[in-house]
Image 1 (tube, rainbow, N blue to C red):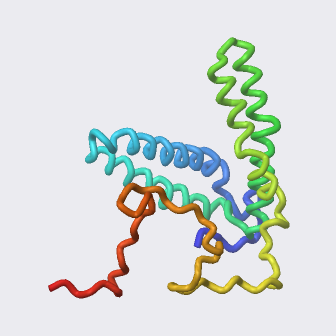
Image 2: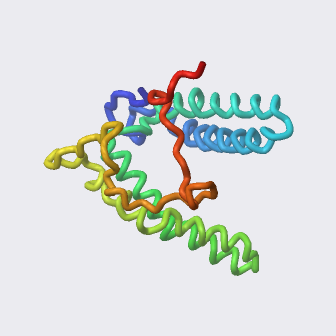
Amino acid sequence: MYQRDRVSGPEGPFCPHRANLDTAMPGEALAHARYTLYADHAAGHRPAPGRLFRGTAQVELYEHFAGEAVLYCLVGTTRANLTRSIAGERYEAEVMYPTFARRADAIRDHQAARLFRHNAACPPPEIAAPVTNPDAWESPPCDEAEPAPIAVGEPDPTGGTAEPEQGSDETGGAVKKTPSRRTRAPSA
């Protein structure tokens, strides 16, 4: 949907609008983010402007930015998209945000420095590791059979070892279950 046939990449003769797109696309992306934040802020106390901001944000993303992304050939194969994304995230984590944090510390803006260090550390390593390995995104082979679904009425797969809920009635603390609608006697 958002992919255009390529003769060459954005650097080649196929994309004569690159300079314009380099200017326009960050503005459209920032407008989408800004209007989304405005909508979230207004949602509780001013619903009408909130809806206006949210609708405008969607136009910025799905019409303006997406249309420009097609001209720019921004979306490629999944592997190319992953490779580009991984490189961008690594740059942010290893170069950009640490540099910003050092600059903020140098002028004693410790609040900004903390934010930049936090952004450099996101996502946490246990999430980042599989994301930074494009081979982890390949579909796994179907060697293992899917577990059979448990039908309604079958025994508890935990073997009934779950802790009983605590309650307070004449059964000595056990909670009575109401009968299923299917097993209840019809009311008169």
